[in-house]
Amino acid sequence: NLIFSNDPVPRAYGYLSFIENYLENATAEIADKIPIPSAIKFAVQLKSKLETGLDTLADSSIAQEIVTTLSKYVHPGNIVYYEDKDSKPVVLKDMGAFYKNTKGRTDTFRSVPYKPVKKPLSETMTWHREIRPGLMYDDSLLH
View 1 (tube, rainbow, N blue to C red):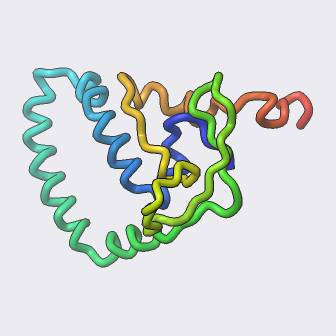
View 2 (view 1 turned 120 degrees about the horizontal axis):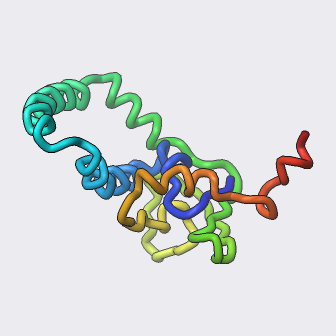
């Protein structure tokens, strides 16, 4: 498993607090993409629908089962993490969502927190695709 920077994809299952922080950071960028005049009416309607929907979803047994299942996921093997394109790789272990890091270990999957950025939505695909030749097989060698 290779993970670059704030890539939310490998964290989407099993590291839910990271995803919450990512989404919280992304709200300003989402709001910037919505035109203000029509957004006000839409936001009021959407807020009501979302609150009702989220309350219903959170109370549903299906949602609780999904969260329970996601929380149990553990990446098998080592995770090779690159903070940025110039950093050296760091080997991490996924100890699971309920691992109590009482000794302050920095080599665990969940010891690497989300780092807020200005435009997380814009950067997501870069984070997810940044692993380049040298870290993966060059595409020309595969075909």
